[in-house]
Amino acid sequence: MKPAITLSRFTCLAGALLLAACATTEAPAPRKPAAPTLAQVMSEADAAARAGQYERAMTLLKGGGTSYPADKAPWLQMAQMKFDRGQYGDAIGDALEALERDPDDKVANSIVAVSGLRLSGKALADLSRQNNLNGSLRSEAQELAKLLRASIGEDVLVPPAKRPPAAGKRAAGSGTPAAKGAAAQAGAADPFSGLK
Image (cartoon, rainbow, N blue to C red):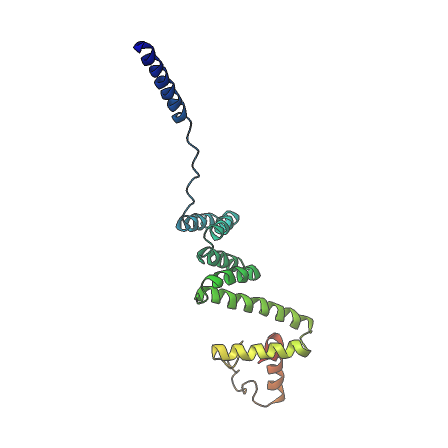
């Protein structure tokens, strides 16, 4: 009888080995590819931008901003690219995102300031062309001009073009009616002349 017990043990052992072999032959679950590092994202975006693939670069940077939400680099790069393309409103938005992550970033602050000035300058030029800069808009623009003059340390935001006085004639603004008329005409060509 001992051979029957050995045979049943052998059968059990063979069954267990067969089950173990089946369990290990399953294909392992596919691993997700490792997310690219921020440096890789920035490098790919830079290469795409240099190749003229603006939309691809922006998509990569947006993905980098999503994958690395605490880092300012993707937002700052998007702001710079939009600024370079003259998309000042969008550049301000992305620069503000960078400033949320680093309030002291000078590049982001510069993009916000210069983009804002360019948008304001365009709006003021449009209003001047339409002769609609009056009332509270005019006084607010004058206050902003004072603030800008104080910030950059200049008395005049847009200096007039210097012309050498003609031989034998007095310089413009010297008191003669002709000189005053010439100065007034020069000021009319400057959309910011009312803000000085």
